[in-house]
Image (cartoon, rainbow, N blue to C red; front, side, top):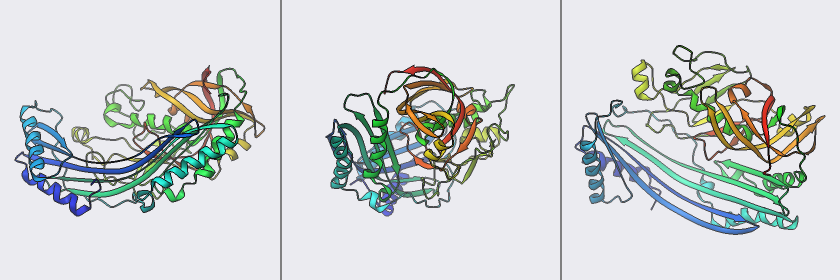
Length: 444
């Protein structure tokens, strides 16, 4: 059993809290049940289902902290894990940044659970793979992709009376389509809470069209170009930028939001006025748990408003040190935009480059958020509002802090998932001027 009801989860956590002899005790119980299917070379390679549940117990004697985990929940096992955590706490050195367990929180449930997603069957997963493989076979193309669905629950409690419980479900899909000679590549991805909104037969056509259209790519000279960035292309850059919104990093001079001589840039206007980003755990398209990893209740939080920095994340330790209020760290990022699609932005572009996605993004300089990475799976030259021909991929060196000052137009936000990002994101396609490409890449 991996999905526990609220009543069952509370019973286990209550036992743990009562068993502890430490000064304080916090515990989290999590479980998941999910399936997946993977295919490559137009054939299914693996499929499976994974179910698991685990309990983490953290106790403290003064400022000495110990943590232990377990995946068995009978009475003897629960007592054993509590005693192990206490044993480790007594052996641990004092933590100079120790903060007490959080007080009782008020959590407002968010719409993270979708029944149809939780009930996805092996037959459904097989149908997704078939919807991608069959049209590719007919067109002499090669498909490789992955579909997964997850149903989980999260429960937390502590010795101060706090308790939270919620179930969630979501799906991830990605597919790369190549021409049989390997010269053309297209890509599509979807991340959704509700599988009822997913249509593999429709989505795969995006990857097919880009694969066909990217054959015989021409080389353009590296340099600064106007670009149309699809949501997946900018999501990774913006996600990296959010590391700079940590208040401690900013105050200690390790962020692009640090001020020379000390302090941070909270309240300053740093981006184009069209840039507005907020977090909202109750957003209908991107709901997340109403608490963060510390158990703090999340709030609807303005992060950037018309280009102005409205938020920095204060951990509980740093908030206490700086005399600030600590609120739950955002679990999603919602960037406002317009009503246009990616292709609408293309139609309004005299000369530019369409970027399907960015890949292998790495930090170069955290104090300017200078990032490097590659374009991939469909990069095209635009002229007079039309896609003229495919071009070879580029390596880029660009800072999202600069990119968000060079906006010409924003499209309609869509939900984007990123394995390397801690956020669920709603990101619009963007038309950006002076985006910096530094060299060519031979990868398709």
